[in-house]
Length: 81
Image 1 (tube, rainbow, N blue to C red):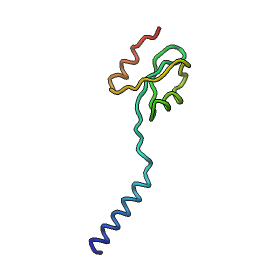
Image 2 (image 1 turned 90 degrees about the vertical axis):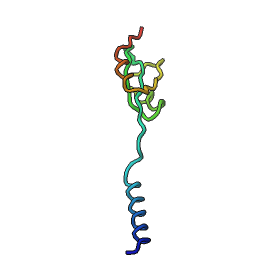
Image 3 (image 1 turned 180 degrees about the horizontal axis):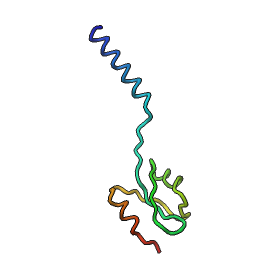
């Protein structure tokens, strides 16, 4: 095989490999208040998705993006009154 043919075969193989794998997810962690008044966390691709999939989310709750892994530990210590 010539170098050009090897290059073509490699690019075709790379294209097929990229198409075979699902899109990369950029999931993030969000905090929200559930119906019991407790702060919970959920992992989602966006804030809207977090609201949609958060179990027992309170009707007046929104979500807060947790940008630092250490924030997840702080969420467990938050008291909502």
